[in-house]
Length: 309
Image (cartoon, rainbow, N blue to C red; front, top):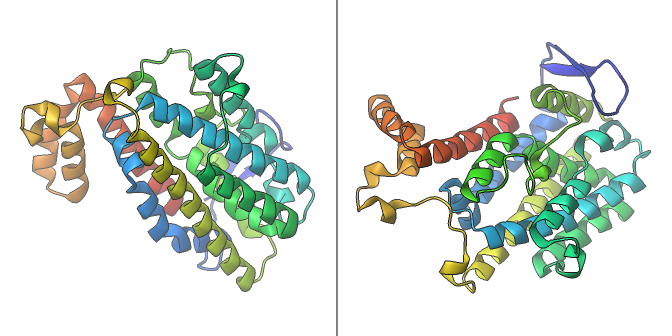
């Protein structure tokens, strides 16, 4: 499928979907195939697995938002610098996609009005930021890889993850602290992602440049994994009672792993339809199970959005 915008770039875009046949040399397909392995590795980092188990540590969540703020500020500075570059201009959607202002509001919620004096860019995040500035200034076409990696991921399952985090950390139902996940300028996430991919596929790039974009996207995933690993190390220094652990895991189930919603979700993912259905019914009767099942579903939705759409 391909989506076309029937008005110019700006808040409130309306999209029309039409049939489109993707080929193996289309940039979106090349990127999806070339990053599949590293994408799976990123989703299997401890930080991400803890999130999917419902163990959303509030202090680490806040530090993660700080890392995102510096990352998106750098990326969007370089996007503004290169908004008229022929290899990036078709992907310039500031009102729809830009996240640094939303992240600033999230940080103000978590840290207070003087949040800027309380946060700093970590070492792993700084390496990510430095690379973004380097490509933006020296090789702007590679910005496509960074924008694709971040924004398409943000639009995949983001609303479900927002609800999981909101409930696990007991955040306000009005969305404070989670504005990063809210894309007010996008009418349909699915249609917008189709539009974005079609714009990527229309870029006039030779195969060698596409391969370089895959290499850069793989680097972007590695930068993200380094940030996750850094957060894990920080988590080891924070007393357990200072962490908002969110939802219970296997150990809180009295030793009965079948009562764990995450385990049920994993069984469903790996097969065994009758067993999965039986466990799913039990899981969904439990409020904790509803949250964790939503998180698991969000992960699958994200993968589908990356590889199938």
